Length: 195
Image (cartoon, rainbow, N blue to C red; front, side, top):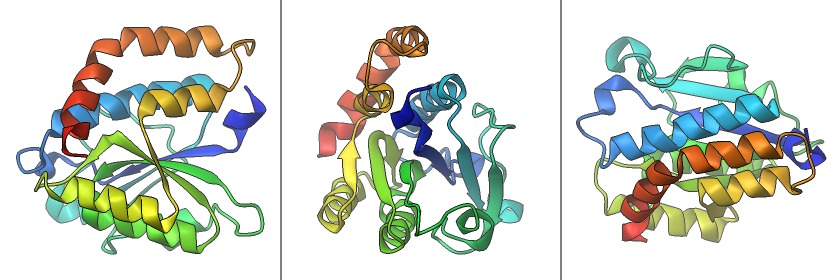
C-alpha cells in the first residue's frame, strides 16, 4: 500500500433502504460507494459507516457489503462524529477522511464540519453524495468547500490515494476504474450536473 493511502479513511453516511425512494439519484450514490468499498479493500483502508435511527429507517442498503467496517454505528445525531466513531481518531494525528452518503446538506454537512473542527482533512466525493431535494446538493458542496473540505470526484480521489503507478496495488485500482467507468460516467454526469 502506498504511504499516501495509509493515511486515509472512508466514511459511509446513512445510505439506508428507507431513503431509496426519496433521495435524488440514490442509485448513483450506491454505484460510487460500491466502487470505493472495493478500492478500500484493495488498499486496506478502514471504513466507518453509520445509520440514522436504524430501528425506524432500516439498515444500510443491501447492495453495500461492509462486514469489515471498523465501526458500523447507529446514531440519532445528524453528524457521524459520535463517540463510537470519534474514539478512533485523534486531533494530535489528523486523518484524511473521504465521505459519501446522504443527505449532503444535513448529515454529510454536519459530519464534515465536525471533522474539520477537530483538525481532520475531509474529502467530499461529489459523485457519491445526494439529498432528497437535488437543489440542496450544490449549496451544501459550496458551503463545505468554503469551510475547508476538498470537493472532488471518486476517480480523482482514487488516483490521489495511490499517488504512483509503481505501487503494487496500481493494477487493481486501474482495473477497478476501468470496470466501473460506465457507472462513474453516469454518476458524475448526473450528480454533478447541479454544480
